[in-house]
Image (tube, rainbow over all chains, first blue to last red; front, side, top):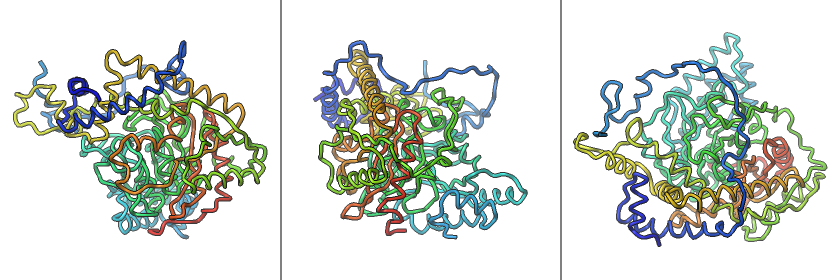
Length: 93
Length: 490
């Protein structure tokens, strides 16, 4: 089981509100999942480069040109709250 | 012409030669969706302009324009793909009202090839699930048995295709999300090699694993669709610059001398007897056709599921950080915005917008990436991932294609596994290692359970070796004991 303090810390890092009930559930389930992960701890991986992108990335050149593919109206059309073309948010400073 | 069971090419040829209009085709499938989908819930939204778009296509054909190899072919698109002007929710409340201003590359390419988008297809929330039970739009039902799940996460695509509500569908596969529902619903589903298909405009789940592919009714339709959607895209730096082969033209049922690998680790028993029988039948069939059966070994696949969940959850927790209630998507209700603390704004919005399974994975991923744990988890998983890939590459020196089960058992009942996440995760035991290694994989229907549920066989090939895998699938399809069988709702 993962303690409540850790769950609260993780939830804070993830900017994710979790209810009391969820916190309890997650503390058990996360512990179970992490125990499952223990299987890989035993594997010898000395000197092995981690694999992130499974196929080779081939670099390419492109012209550095300015493009405007979307208008400000299009880009803000989905905003839950806005003023003109600006997103409305709580005070950030 | 029987439109319901026609192939992509049959429809496109008929439309282009004006034997049938794109409008008639669109109306035919619109009627099917209207009359049948109430029972399946495979569509989360419908394109109200579909018939109108088909008419526009007819007008272009009348003017003598070349409208592409998929002229007038009705498609359903999984909710993960951005579609200009059509809701794209990823099956989540947090994107409930999101209407993208652009098409994902895959959808743009399909449209350019002439498809008509009939609507968006239901899925597990953010593609996190193997049963299509975590969607904001509700559970999808398996057309072969309405009490069973269609599989997931591309459950809507699989159900709609099996019920022939469309001629083709698109899915995404992060750990089996194309292959597993394809198997559960008796259709053909292909996950191409990582880097073959652009991820631009596809809602990101786990970027190093995600790949899009066709979920259709035949191997040939799958090959054709892959030809349209594959290839380099300057919007996705992980796409390959290799040319796209003409898979569909090169398809052959001749598998004489091909080496079919059976993975020792997958032959340890524990399969449902009907799945076991299906796999054995497929091996026998290929043997009779002249293929050589060889044993191969990828010992590290035994840890594929934990490595997969670790990588997927970590990348998801990072990818899903963008849902903040600012630029698009759901925002929690705040009476006086200027009095709200920013942290609280984010956390409340995200806490209300995400479903249970998604939150669970964000928590797990955040934990694994948090200070002090990165090396022990994500980094370690990456190292093991390389070992898994290397072992696969060794195995493919001894064989052309690896054959296995897709899942240990056929489709399960709705509600049966949803309360136990770990058991649910173990659904993916045969499918996740393909994604970890970036290999192409597919499911082709080859059996039926005693209860009348479809069972597929999984084929996996080396990087960019899709043709070999498709050829074996084509051979199996030609001899499939379940060829021509359809669910009763059809």
